[in-house]
Length: 201
Image (cartoon, rainbow, N blue to C red; front, top):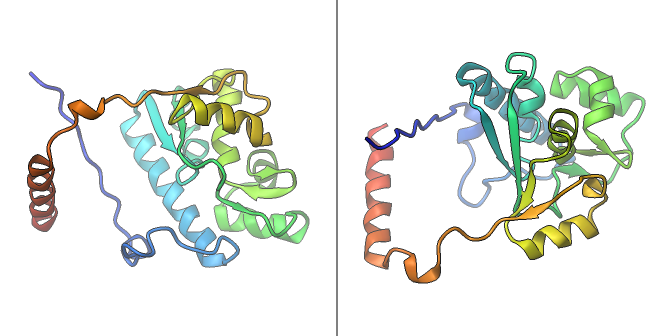
């Protein structure tokens, strides 16, 4: 018997209005973009709380707040943060977040100001990736951050202050050798099968 993978899809008008060209909403300074990420992370957190996975795999910043929302309902959740593009950390780098701006951000994300200040500010600026790093430091003694290669792990650890206090930042090897990759015909068949499956939903 092979294990069964359960695929969960989130549906909301804000999620579905995106296109291939605008998959990531921009710019982060716009209120609607912050609201999008607030809704997205809270929706993912609801799935985590409902399904209670042992480990939540978080690639980059996009769902970095979800464990923060889910933790009260799933206190044993473990987080694996995999860095693909750590340079962009889901931040608003133009403004220092304090006073009325802190209250504004806290309202958008439906979080207490103290939590925003503790888990979403890096060097005084809004930073979504910080939420995942903080979670890993608080609940996993800083273990659970890796990057897509050993070289990139070293680069992230040396360049970005967000990771300087992390005890380890490991690189993971590509799990598939080039000569083991499926041929193009198989990939095209897979794409057609996936397309047909999506059409049936």
